[in-house]
Image (tube, rainbow, N blue to C red; front, side, top):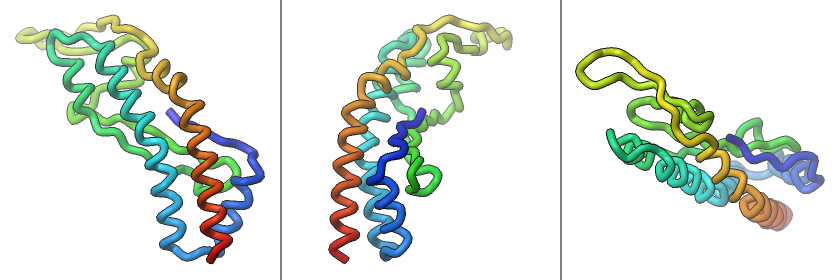
Length: 150
């Protein structure tokens, strides 16, 4: 899932400023953007884990998943911050969000499809996105100030 702030003049100014700024400033800005968005990823993981079945340990495995973020497409006018959840077992978290998981049946080797609550991750994203978008805009303003000071 990705949060986008599109077409804002501040993004354009930031992108232009980044091209001429030092590498440490660019790294600092990207880190700041990821730090702002990380709590949303954690909330998504936790909400998804709470909605998954406890029996069999799926909920616990989702809760132990790693939240990673990256800025995609540089930091131009259409920059994206992508939230990815990765489990050690490689579960299809997108499928879970659609309301269906496939898993093997213990001791039989057969695979079955099981319904789970849909939109557990998406609903958490939708609830948190406005707050994160506002924080991203504040982070952009801070970055613009930092660039213009150098």
